[in-house]
Image 1 (cartoon, rainbow, N blue to C red):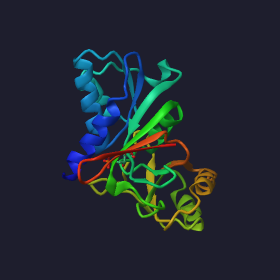
Image 2: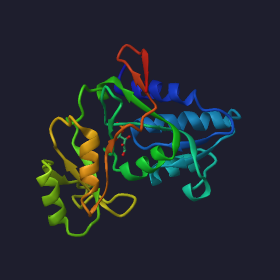
Image 3: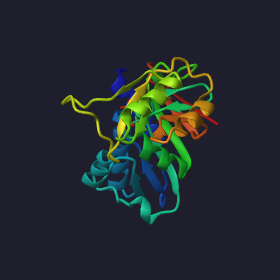
Image 4: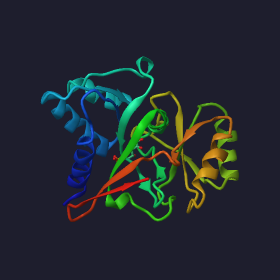
Length: 226
Ligand SMILES: O=C(CO)[C@H](O)[C@H](O)COP(=O)(O)O
């Protein structure tokens, strides 16, 4: 199976866990896209849910495809969120934010009773850190902030949009993609990064994952749960 088919079958497996009456969190990215699409099909078939989104793009998809939508200001908890990831380690810690939505994704994950991660097997790694870690920073004192990220060993590069301008997140911030090498202690790095005043959030999701649904190249699905 090709990568797109693997994303689709992982997403569709996770969507089976959605039940009537749930408040569902919608992730962001090319794998989450397939989950949103399948949720929309199930809504057309009669599933009764409401959904909150982790990005403007996912909100647009939900509205376009007729998924009943709620803003985060209208709810206290999310039953189940389904989202992709850039890397998943053996303890189910994640790097996220390749699509730039890490802050809202972390807000949803933290508010969710179950946080389900959908990936193809290429995202499974023994140790995080091959994928550059996205760090969302405010557009103020860039030089000082990048210096602080360098002091932590991050080798930061400001992300650019296709037009060559700085990539701007849904929250009006910038992303510094940081190469730390192998991240042996993601919990500690997560805390140290978020202690930098101009860092809004970073893409390390430590201890947040309930289950990972991984699609293998042969089309089989592996579910790992904490
Ligand atoms: O964290 C994310 C967006 O901020 C995505 O979930 C992550 O980048 C994976 O994306 P894709 O499913 O397109 O590979």
